[in-house]
Length: 474
Image (tube, rainbow, N blue to C red; front, side):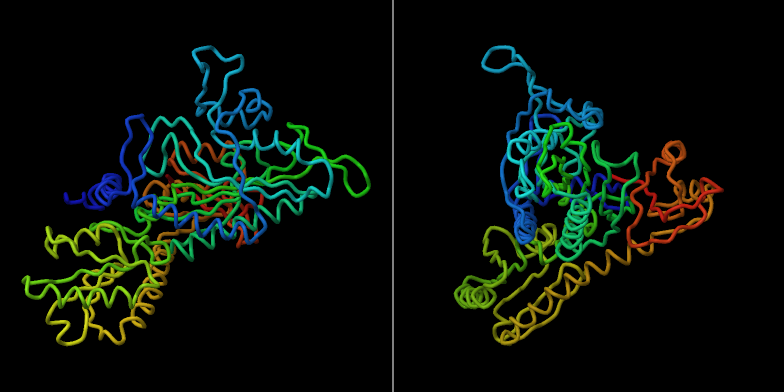
């Protein structure tokens, strides 16, 4: 196990070191793509499990659509093709022959799904149609980073069709709320929820909502998006239904998704120089038990007690590390690196005193003695406390690194001199937005939907502006 690059020395290298040393992922032989290792995939499975249940509770059904999409489909929606063209991977040959029509490797599934919707929707009784897909997608990235930006990644994409614009908007916001709930309650990361600017919205959407998190290096990370598509795709793919008055209408649609970049978010929002810190609600292993066996004569005594503890705490995700070839110190370091929330140590002397030693990963150097009869209750309390503490730390970090400015000059100066979120009142204007990006490398992250007031804007003196968050981002 090598030492991790300190976060303060090189945050990006620290991030890569953690992923490789904690065995979350590795580089694949195909440039820009990754292999997700079992421990990293176990985190993804827990993300899937929670969200899949929530989607089903809100009436969505899972389906699967093809990986290969006819090129003509991608070209049907003008903004969509323009937005995705630079990232497309195209199949031109198959079975030893040139294809009559090139096929695009799925960058997102709006087009193929809408083609199918045009076959499935004919009446208002077919609506709402609420579909979700768990899949892989390919976007040919030039500059890649494990989990955050890879040429192939895993995600879910929801696609829905509705009778009215109001229903579609309600759906888009409902799914955004589910993403917020997951990121805050399960991943323990604070977010700001809002609407993207025209420049930053999804290609083909009328409106894009997002949740924005702040990483430990104070950069923003877009943790989930939900798009209101209006009738753009239903018109492009000639999806029509007869309404209650027997008139033909185009449905209003949404699409929404989160991806394996959530794993990158969890690493960068919680970690430290020892490695990962995983919130208990998400951790593949919530508790690790390390037996301390000073000599072989104590082995049976200690392992019997460990087995008892394992059964006592079996409702949690628990692992016993009984490896004999490595020292307890090595094990402590490894489980800290892997971010396990609670470590329990037990040796002959502890058994004599009917207690164990507990260390919690979220508080550096913490060690408490707990009697075995109180262990189950104490572990329940600690897991709740750790989850809550991790979220509060994330929220405090975001609050302390959010700065408000009252002039364009001050906005540029603050973005160039400080990392974090910079808020202001801004009147949307493409030219001004591009200027800020060129001068500072920062973008509008969102117009938060929890702030409804407007005030004199800092960029268009005679116009009111919306409350806006600017930040540098991943």
